[in-house]
Image 1 (cartoon, rainbow, N blue to C red):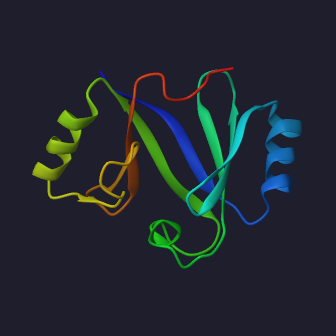
Image 2 (image 1 turned 90 degrees about the vertical axis):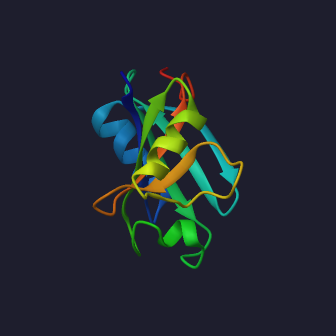
Length: 126
């Protein structure tokens, strides 16, 4: 069975938001990196990856995907076979919003939410 392993929040202040989750809830930072048009800080509670995303600009398609301003941007579902699942989501008419060849694969699920498919063990647990 596939499972949700990650949730990403689009934030205005990466440092203040990170400090909040670390000090209040005990989340541990695992990685901070610049990815395409944003900076991602990953934190974990030991089971789930929490990504805080600060976009360089609200103008990119990915930044706008879940709406303007701070919000839950997307969640990730871990799968055994990414390509197989991409084919399945396309059968449901889901719009793939990631650039071709980019993994993880972000898509707009029925109902309009943004999700992504990730390969097993993509996110660190500690």
